Length: 188
Image (cartoon, rainbow, N blue to C red; front, side, top):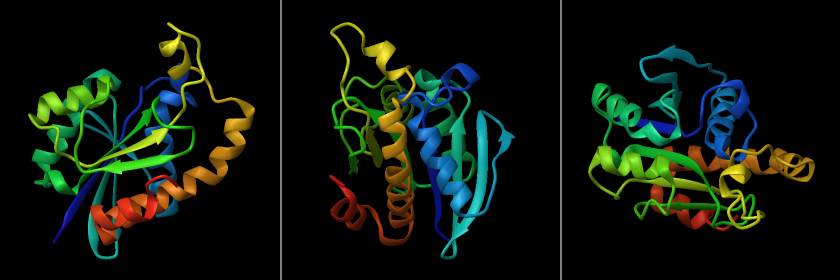
C-alpha cells in the first residue's frame, strides 16, 4: 500500500498564527478538515492520519520551528517508511505572486531556511515541494517582517478562494501523481 507524507511548514505559537510564513500550516489544516480528520500531538509535530482513495496519508505540522523542519520530516519518513517521491513539502515563497502555486519535484531551497534544513537532513534537493506565493510587497531589508506579518484584509479574502485550490492540488498529488499535478495546478 502506498503511503504519503504531506508536510505543511510553519512556526508554532500564537504569535505566528495567520502569518504569511505559516501558509503551509493553513493549507494542511484545510486539507485535514476537508477529509474530516484531525491532528494529534506526536513526536516532533502534530500529525493526522487519513485515507485518500485507498492510500494512507500522514499529514504533518512540525513543531520544530521553520528553520529545523528537516528533523521532523526525516523522522516521520523513516518511522512510516515513506518514499521521498511520496513526500510533499508545502511552504511560502516570496518569489511567487500572492496566491499562485508552483509545484516541483526538485530544486534549490531558494533562500528558504525550512527547505534548506530539509535538503540538509534528506541529503538531496530532489523532493516534491509545493510553494504558495506570498508575493514580495515589502521594503528593502523588511523581508523577515513581511513573512512573519499577518495577511492583509484583501489577502485574507483571496485566501478563501486559494486554499481550496491548494487542497485540490494535494489530493491530486496523492491520486494523480506529481507530473499531472504540476500540469494542472502550476501557475493557478
